[in-house]
Structures are given as C-alpha cells and as structure tokens.
Image (cartoon, rainbow over all chains, first blue to last red):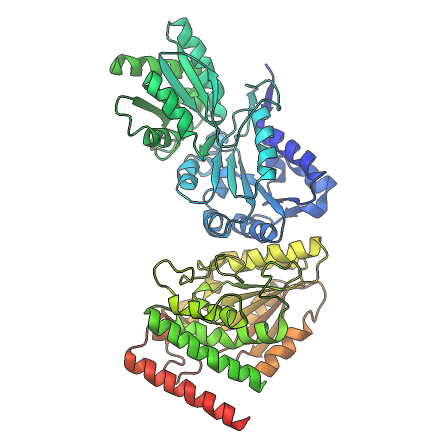
Length: 313
Length: 276
C-alpha cells in the first residue's frame, strides 16, 4: 500500500509552486527538518526565513511579509502554532486578514509518546472560533497537494493541520477534483453516515468496509474543510440517512463533531455520535497505539457505529 | 520647527476632544507619543494619503495601539480619511475603534495587544530587503510594552537579519497603568539591553523636534544594524495636571478637567502663533 506523509507532500507541492511564483516565502522556527522544508533553505534561501525557537515572532514576521505582498507559509509543529503563537494568529493574521497560511505539522497525537505538550487536540476548536481564518485537515497526499495549490491562489488566511506519519492514499491522483470548502462523498450507503476529517478518513473507509461485511451499508464523507464547512452536503446526506457518526483526531469538544452537530441542530430526527479524544491527556503510546486505545482504528469505529445504531435504532 | 510645534498643539487639542466626546481613550500615552508621530509623519516619512498602499511608502506601526487617538488625529489631518470622522471615535459602528485596525486608511496592521508590532515590522523590513525596496519601517512601542517577551524575540531576529531599514522607537515615559515602569518591572539599563541584542541605540528628547528630526534623518548610522530610538517623554505631555500622573493612562476628563486642559492647550497655541 502506497503511503506518504502529508507534511512531505505539502512541502514538495509548495516547493514546485515557489519555483514559478516568486511571491511564495516560507517561515519556520527551528523546524525545517520536521516540517520537511529543508529544500527551501538549500535551494532558495532568499525566500526561506528561519527565526529560531520563536513561534510568536515567526507568525508576526509572516504577517509583515504578507502585508508587503508575499504569500507567507509558516511551517512548524501544530502544537506550538495553535498555542504559543495563537495570539499572533488571531491578531496579526486573522483579524488583520494578512495572507498567511499556517501549516501545522505533526498534529493530533502523531508525536505519540512525546506526551501531551506535543499533542494538538484543541486546534480545530480554537481556529473554528476565530473569525477570518479557514481550517483545513487534508486526508491524503493527493488532496494535500491540491489544497496547497488552491491556497496559493487565495489571499485569505488559513490554518492547515497534518500529522507526522505516512498515510495511505485515498484518491487516485492530485488531479482528482477538490473544490474549496466542499466535502467529498467517498462511499454511498443507506444505513449510516460516517463523516471524518484529516488522517482518520482512511480508518473510516476501512470501518465502512468492515461494516459492509456485517451487513451495514455506510456512506463515508471526507470533510477536509472544517471552516468553511460544507453544510449543504452534510444536511443533504443526513436528511436522507439520519444516523451520523463523526470521527476526528481531536478533542470531542469543539471539533468536527460539534461543527456537524451544530449544522444539524435544526433537524431533530438526526442522531449524531461524536468519536474523538475524551477530555483528558491521552495515554502514552505510538499514534497507532493511541488510536487503538480510543477506538479510532477500523475495528474500533465499526464497534462504535454498531453500538450507536443499536441504541438509536 | 515652529510649524511642527503648532501642528502638535493642534493635534493635542484634537486628541483631548476625541477622548472627552467619546468618553473613552488613553490620553496619557497619546500625549507622550504625539511629538514622535508628528516628527515622523510631517518631517520624515514618505507616503501618499491618496495611495495608502503605494509600494514604496515608509511603513509605520503603532505597536502601543492604545495611543490610537494621536494616530487617528494625525492620519485624519493628513487626509487619509475625513477629519469629521474623528467625531465618531469609539461610537457604535464606527471604524475608528479604540485600537487601530486596517479598516482605517493608513493603518498597516491591527494592533492593541502589546508586543506584536516589532515582529510584524521586522517582516515588512525583511520583505523590503528581499525586493530591494528603499522603504523604512518604523515601530513605535511603549516602555511598559517591553515586558512582553515577544518584543525580545523580534529584537533578536531583526539583529540576526541585519535589518537596518527597521527603526524601533520606545516612548520612554516611565509610566504604565499600575505605576512607574521601574517599580512594576525594572527596564533599566534599557540602552544596554537593546545594545546587547545587537541594535544601534540612540537616545533623544521625545518632545524636541529638532533632535527627533536630526536622528530620524541620520538613520542608518550603522549599516546592517536595526536602530532603536529611546525617546524620553512625559506621560500626559502638554496638560499640566496630567503630566507624569499615571491615573491619566486611561481616564476620561470630567467637563471641568476638559475645559481646563483645553484652556491650557489653547493658550499655548495662541502664544505660539503670536510669537511667529
């Protein structure tokens, strides 16, 4: 199975765009290796800015670059860019509307055993509640590539979160059609809708396959854009099927699940189950072990869906 | 110089009126920083009020965003937006909020939370170097603001990148909201701090136009170094009973206080005009 880490797919896509678009600059905070952007420093150092371990200033400087005409991409660990520099993101970027894209890498629990200082399970909640910035979690390398191209063509601020480890390809090519702000129907079924975002989409797809073996036919939606959220698609599908399970590598508070629930709140006949990380600092383990612990792997999702369907009928 | 002094007095009166009418504002810091703003906008910087996004313009960032009344008064006077709009300052629906936003022509970045301006300014200065543009970037900070660690992050980065087109200005009025800067969080030896961070440091009387203009026009004194000007000022400058009184950091004058302050400033303006 072909697996690619999204951080590498993003860096490569941006690097190839930067070769023809002189406005692209990258900013990082001693994270060029973990973000996979060393090639900018090696091959176009005049457009690669290193600020040292200073995430607040990385964002402030990116805002200054953007306000002077650059397309500024800030790369670094999602945990720090959603906490340490959040005020700069709120004020210098989102409130000002400067053309800065924050690329948070190694998000969710992908730093696994490094502990909760390095986990990012609150970022969707924070950025969702911040006007003026889009929130995006691509699900595979092809989608990430396509989204980077779209971001280069747009002048608005965005936060994009990916994990650290290689994930399987879901789509056929970077040319697959992705529309900005829209979700993608990956599979059509009539018993339940699984809505997932980011790198757990693959697990949701696998779960649908297992559910089919158990006689349950699931629709699967990939929802890379948490903001703007494709409410039209969610309402359309949920109106038909009325049983919705959301899956995300994020706290159960404030993430995709709550966004979907909010969007469906005027459809009282729809039941929603939110699968996410409970309100606790996760157990120690690799990303995969943590997934298994919380039931984010295909078997776990299958079990949760069957349990949910049993309860709501 | 007389012309700048007169302009500064007129704008002090404007600031006083704005705050009194709005029932809100930061008068102490606006009055301490006003002469710095007047020197920059009327004697040093290149800009075009009719083309606020002119690429070659010098950039100004009010990092101490609470001194916004002085900033708006200057921008309106220069024609960035209609002067009558100052009467709407802080009123419902007005774009003239109590801290600067880019909705107001001439404002480069939204500020208000302290410790943000220097990094944004460094980014603008960096872009200027990348694009081989000749513009300069001026960032006005409060002295109390220097308590924010992000200022010193940005200071290190600006020195590392040799941004000699970046000019920091510290409004050194020695007061912050809770008291004297040296009692709240000691800043001195401020000159040596900036110097140790790799900056060229200059001291100036922040109310002396001759000194201010001379220093601004001489920059860069040292190639490849960012410059910081420590401008020694008086909080509440120009109104006798507001000077050096921390309670005027964020206090609205009563009717009596307003009239007294207006009387003082108007008398000074009249005397200045009579002596011309």
